[in-house]
Amino acid sequence: MMYTKEDVLAYVNEENVTFIRLAYFDIYGHQKNISILPDELPRAFAEGISFDASAIAGFGTDIKSDLFLMPDPSTLSILPWRSLDGSVIRMYCDIQYPDGTPFELDTRYLLKQAEQYAKEQGIEIQIGTEFEFYLFLTDEKGQNSHIPLDTAGYMDIAPEDQGEDVRKDICFTLQEMGLHPEASHHEEGPGQNEIDFRYSTPLQAADDAATFKWVVRTVAKANGLIADFDPKPLKEHSGNGMHVNVSVNDSGHLNQTRAFMAGILYRLPEITLFLNPCTESYQRLGECKAPKFVTWSYQNRSQAIRIPAVRNQKKRIELRSPDCTSNPYLVYLLIIYAGIEGILKQREPADPVDLNLYQASTEITSHLTPLPSSLEESSAIAKNSDFIQRVLPKEILKNYLK
Image (cartoon, rainbow, N blue to C red; front, side):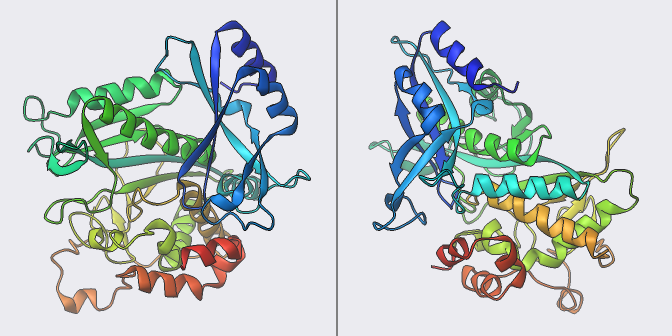
């Protein structure tokens, strides 16, 4: 449902809302928030709420530190953890300079620009994301013990799968907040879980990704557990991926999805820094169904992109290299720009690689383009990328290179 300012103000007055969280994101996708009381909401909508940008990673300096949060009423969400004092709501915010100009390092704003660019090209993009995470027991201090909740395997059931009730709590909580999880199951690693989302617009998908990670951590903590999204929490077991499924509605043009995929593959080494932004990301790539090469195939899970088999649905592409430490707003906008570039330049992908690349010989893999094997390598490639310099503000690249 698309709420308006009037809808939100009416809801606050009628439903005993006593606390309002205004949330936003730093350039790495970490969620921040400031809370206000209901009396301040009209002012927040009219003027915004100021905050010290110099204290936020990558946002600014002490010289020009004032920015304003402008609540986006369409993102209204009622938090299901009702307190005795009344309801709590949350809205995501646009970030502006004091003169009302959009803040160019607000990655949510940058994704909106990418969506508008796609619309201007007559291309509608839908995204559905699959998230993997581990559930660990806590130690005597309440910290992460890195001891998995269970020893179950892929799609096992209870009693071996001890995370089933936690996943159920997560999905029900998300539904109460207006989100649309599609499926959940136990993954391959011990204590590892996956929850998948229904297709939506890129902006909605990114907002949902941010909400999802927060809800998972909150529900896990309420169950005495730690939710771990790190790319490789257990060296000997599967890493955590963030598989991005993309559906392209190209206004009747034939073969556009193929060109869109080719565009992503062409730019994949250059955008890997943002899809896999931490040192641990590169311990995951190339192992346990995480890709190592810039390749594609039908159904084959050892590829960077696969085209899954579908029934009575549109073809989609699944990008398998990103992980959950990435900023989804940046991931989705880079996919949009790379894919549309592929369409405009009529790029053609290389032939599909219908092999298990984890077992392929060096004779075969030596002819394939590898993904960056370290954070240092992906940083060097991004630094010299004309594409990255075109589609991202230089300050974002500068901060990621630090």
